[in-house]
Length: 178
Image (cartoon, rainbow, N blue to C red; front, side):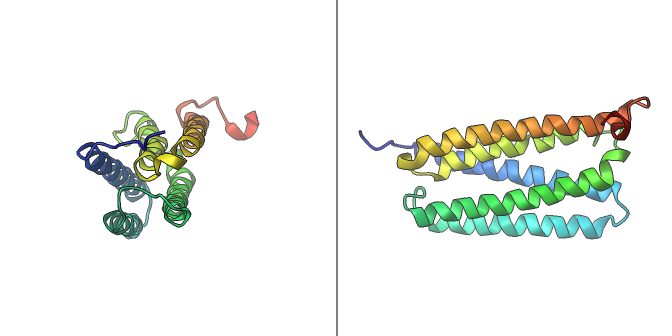
């Protein structure tokens, strides 16, 4: 089987798209915290700093690496970055749903539907980044697992809608319903 060839112009476009998705998601998640919590700018700037630190670290490794992760050690770097991203994502989502979700109104610009849209960037980012960095020899198995993980993330985001729905309906109380 011949090695898969990747377009020299599409790979940089894929990285630009991935970084743009990441920056948009990070900034808007932090904007939710800044807009709806009492700590305002301190929490926003700490969160933005953490997300930007991960961005710079990934950018440095991407610039130093060749086309994609071919060895097990290079693949571990990919999983390490993804793990750090998910930890930051979980912390952000946890704080948002602990501090902000009960304040969101459907009529607001930064309301529950916008939050669900921003959270939905993570599954697409997972598949895109793994497609860009995993070598063709690993790609089949890794992409099938990442698609399953992405679908699970989408399911989790849909389950979070129940928490958001509690604010929209006065007769719905999650504690009483469970």
